[in-house]
Image (cartoon, each protein chain N blue to C red):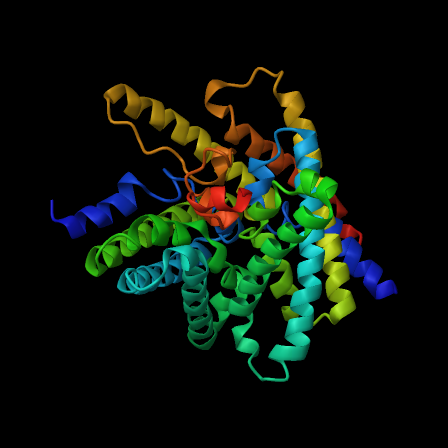
Length: 191
Length: 225
């Protein structure tokens, strides 16, 4: 139990997926203009990464290891993630229309989000079992959720500030990300 | 100009993936803590890019239009796996310091972007040179950023530059600097190509969005029905 808690805090806050591992930079910069959309994206990422860590964990343990084809992990994982996202999209559209309304637009964008593949590969390289992998996935994606929502909140305020012309747009967002990253480094003594 | 030289010039200078198109930002931020890491990442991406452009151009008439994205992903993922093993065997130290970012070359949007926009429409030889040009352009970009961070962080001792916040900060100033150059070139009447990756911050107008969404411009209608 203690071990799971350490994994969870470590991946959610201390080694934040965006601010210290640089995974999922694209949606972090692209979909963080409004808090609501950022929260929607964060929710979709939590959903997909948690599910993907479970499914890739299962496939690694029960197909790749028994067949001695661990070296195929990159190919298998990216295909599994891509089809999983398509499948989840279809399932939500048919069976849970309200959830699809709120998450649907973001789901396809997640296929090539490097955070999903990154978490699946990290679970294997760190030797996590199935439960640890799912906890790691959930915590990592929760870290993404925290980062993108904070960023969206700050960006909404930045709209009203007087920023030098050359720094408007992406440059000021990157400086904000840099300051957030410094703040998150403060957690590094926790574990 | 010879068309092969033109492809190289296009990739390294005119449409440099790092400075002009602003593509592949995840590895750009993650592995540029030193110049050596930048070169290593750039060259391994170049190898994958050249080989994937070669294979995709070779099979461009065989791959059915409807499943071309999954087909490209399989080709790229296989190449990345090969590169990963070659690096583990011959450059174990580099392989260890790049870590998970080597397999993540699969989702680098430069590679799928070139497959989609160039290799799938052009003959083999120009596609190879296109991949080589883009890959070398990416290598130059990563090496420059790595060098700046290494000099500021390790040589001058401002440690923050080799840590995570420094990566964001250097990239911020790079984007601002490129805005200045962009304005100047526009006044001269030679506008630079617009950034086309995620840094534009708008998926709706992004020319690469078909890769992220996995949907082709034509099939969007079909899925709505």
